[in-house]
Length: 333
Image 1 (cartoon, rainbow, N blue to C red):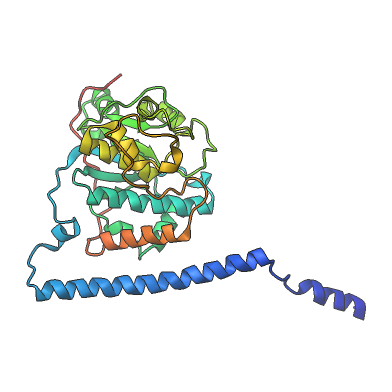
Image 2: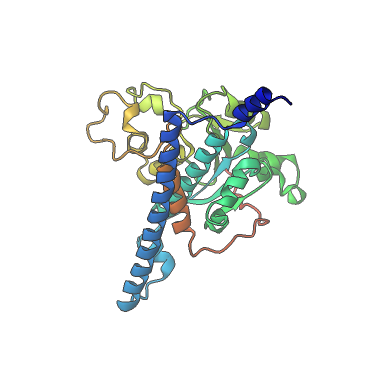
């Protein structure tokens, strides 16, 4: 090889200098990582300090009750399923966003005064599972009142097939399942105990039209949308919400039996234009929303901290346990 060609190969093998924008991104990432470590250290020290203070005060209150906020809970005898069967349809960033939404969902139910009986996460696989396994030493396995299935949600009405008397029993179980999707023409006017509500576990920035609706129709189960347009005409942007926002709306309805108050309490204020139609109802706070593609790393860290804190003293579940089916009730057609 002659000298000019050798020099040319040497030049091309050298890494290109980062642009100013790339340098700023790298610096910000390093700064956030440093802040994350410091924040975790402060939180760990604060927990130790609180434990010492409780011990000195002779606090004999059960630990579980303290973590629940010290208030009585009245469970709503319905169950919510998060369908995670869309792993291959999301980008890596969207998978990260989704796992954060799952942590917020679990925390909301755990801290609610009217929680759902249990949360079931189905079709756990691929990058979603890998991401959850990597967070807090697979802390999700210690989340209380949750089940995690690698199988799809259709196991709800098929896993007891051996004990069923026939197709009628299977149909009865299937009739109690409602897939929530904004593309449905049916509106969900109330939640009922004994029913199972499925939320599509996907963060797709609205790329896939009718995705959850088609899945529900293929499964021959009922589907419905939240009645947002009926109660809030000022919601001018698209009615696509994150997983945790949909779940928190359901929780709020169970607490208040008021859809309008539930929507105003959960949906970010930036999605509204004008004031509430009901003067007695006003937005109570803005929840984290990552669906707009502007996810901030601190939100991801916060979700991890929430999941870690809530599952700190939990015990790992037996993932082979069956999902407790509710007593069949008459279906709404």
